[in-house]
Length: 177
Ligand code: 5GP
Image (cartoon, rainbow, N blue to C red; front, side, top):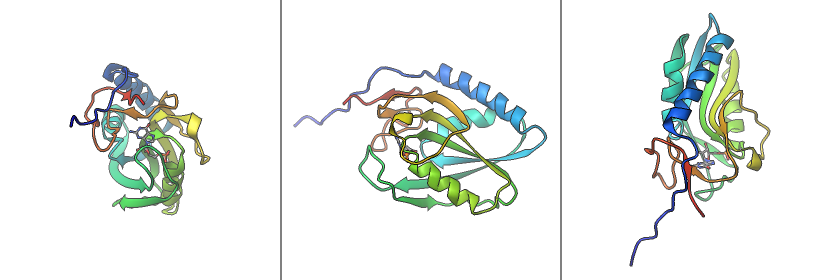
């Protein structure tokens, strides 16, 4: 029997468009935190490419860490129960935290993560997301830096997966369905 094939749609954002946007956001971050140190916390695994783009543009004193959070549910929808599967190793007390996220969809993961980090008493917390999908928002959470807004599509590529595949695509597309 022939294996079922995922069908990838057209390219939504090219690598060139994404890196250009990362440069703009990086410049904004440099202005906003002038003279300060920042701690970038990337969310695994989806934010890896966006994290790499953003960190290259930051000219401030910068520290980097990662966190992994998973929300239970089916592959393409979030259920609302969030669990930290890889914790942050760094001391966050009195630090300027910028969470580097792949996509804000329902907002449930990010809301949880923001509260989780807040409990460690940082100086400030901001959110920098590659994609924002406001159509499906359930939790009240607003990103401070947004790469691009997307419609209600299941996007893949540039770090974002479907069943752990497609993270390596050097552009953002979506699954037809
Ligand atoms: P939330 O619904 O909690 O805002 O999103 C949680 C996580 O679900 C995101 O960080 C991302 O990993 C995943 N996710 C949400 N929407 C999409 C999407 O359109 N495509 C992919 N590949 N993952 C998504």
